[in-house]
Length: 390
Image (cartoon, rainbow, N blue to C red; front, side):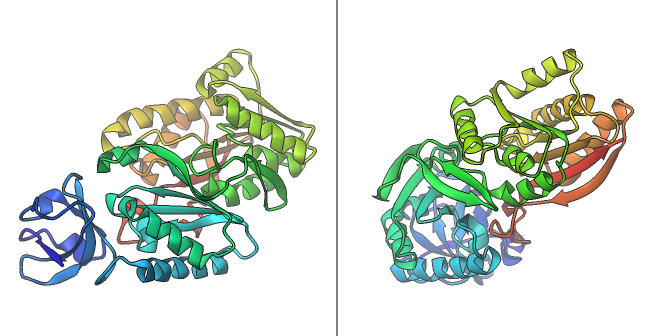
């Protein structure tokens, strides 16, 4: 097996359980080791910190696999996938939709697999997983023999950091245009082929339920509604009026389809750019009892954090200006690089500037099928809050 050695004084982080080795931490990046190869990493003192997958062309030059691994074969992937499946079966009993593999948190670095009943959608963010796609598909079919189709949804720009192209294709079986599913009593028809991410935003599904229960008899504005997650649950729980807003015509088409499936007549959707829509609402003097903000990530890297903070500030300020005394602000951030304390500071600053107070009612993060390794802050990204605006 190939070997790499860390520079002196650069081993404390990985020895504490972090699974990434950065290129500036290695004494030498041998060009004789092919990208995607399995390597054993040693400290400068000659102590092994585990086995990982090598990529000399990435800032993350080694993604450790957690312990010593001799070979990335079918047996290895089946074992890791079985462990991941057993955990989800315990955490998500009776659910048809959940994240089966959450990358590093499941000791499968650079691999994401979402389950939608008998269909799977996967993403690879590392060259090591990319090179072993056929093996991963075989392992998934072995562990989940009822699988009818597997689609690759590799359209993320994060792949560029590993030198990987964007790509989408069916890897096994067939994928229907519309897939009938259910989310805690709400009927859905999702498109894995055309939908964003892997087809849906599974990390907010528990929050859909919580916010929905509190929306009874309220006028609710759901911004960045995507396929209607928050809006559908609010309407189903007796909200007086619900309006979902999204800039994607396809997302709005899906949301309307899902509203019809559930017979929710008080639920409407509009295709619009959210910031412009909120500014127009402010100009018209509109008022909503609950406003839900679930935007895409504003910061893809640390250098984007200042711009992201400005974006979150304006977005939440606009929402607070449309809420009456006692109204509910449901707000979230999926930008890992905007830490919770920073996000809360932004919210507090905007509320104070408006002479408002925010009373925290609920604080959440990603669901348990998106587990977090304490040794890897990068595995935690979702911040979710429900405030009452005073």
